[in-house]
Length: 415
Ligand code: ADP
Image (cartoon, rainbow, N blue to C red; front, side, top):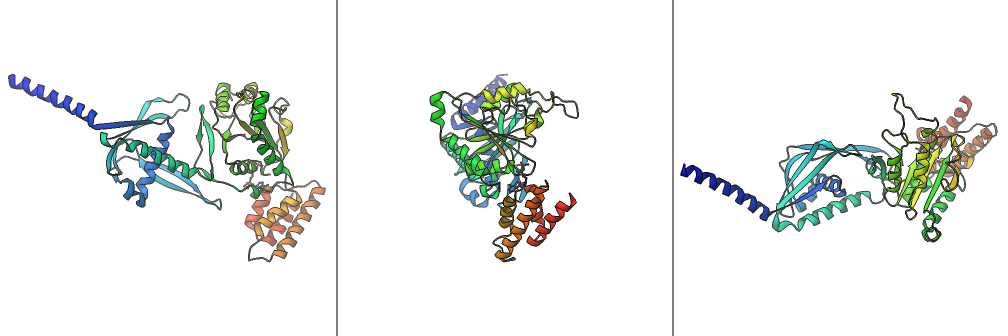
């Protein structure tokens, strides 16, 4: 019996001793997915597990049996895109080496409780390493942050609402140059100048106690470049876009107010097709779901921004006549701009952008054809017929310069 008691005591001692030793020798860092560092860290890990050159510097994967896939859509400068799969550490325990130190990484997912607002499961990553290497944690996180920032540099980030939070939607995109969206003479400049002037008048607003916000409404037929222009402008000013869909399931007046007042700094809030959200009293989708955002709730959200915060709101619509006058009064919409179908000048400019400067066709021929296209569009306009910029772009993509003018002629004949 004495031996038995002795052995139990020794076992307990060993357990206690090893726990105490572990506490003294090891340090742990917990990062949960509410923190921005969480995404940065996983992206960093994915980056390092695939890039050979980095492996030498920061360490290498060691036996990972649980992987998850992260699909990134990469956009190239010519507008095409491709999907790239990256295998990241899935829930479970993994080991890696960072600057000579072994680290254990435990990724855990809490499946029973979801985050109240966004519906995503809670996740935590726990990093453990030797106490003497604790200084590496901040270094690792800083590296992860810098990598994330580098991926966003010079790109346009689009966010959408997830519950009451704004989350990036897809990968950061290549910025579109402002001049590639061809609007009618002076239209683009008017919007750009207005936004730039607004951004320089923060003091002016503050001194007068006026909320520092400005609303823009771009209206006109579909495919005229409203959305493209707003995105290009955001890119030119290094702003992000927060895309808001008012008919989204689960969106309520309360959440809307929260979203409006918590949009990230330096971002435009973009609401597309505002007329669609409130054209009927209650918005009902096919399966009987009723939109929970009320018109008055939306107006409140537009107005209810605290005065110090900068807020730039862009709305687009194809049917300006369907909008309630209460929505487009000054203070809610400060600048209203018509973005219309192609004018002769717009068509000519787009044509020259597409075909000019190529070796396939002499430049004087491009000029002649552009003139011909402009005349054609002008004539058709006199008869009340127009073509959208998106349709023109489609014709130009499919055809050579000469065919493009012909196919535009056909387009009007068929109408
Ligand atoms: P809207 O928001 O007015 O419906 P979009 O901006 O979505 O139109 O444009 C649809 C497509 O047509 C885009 O691929 C865009 O490149 C092209 N496009 C439309 N208008 C223009 C324009 N004014 N200049 C250049 N491209 C345009």
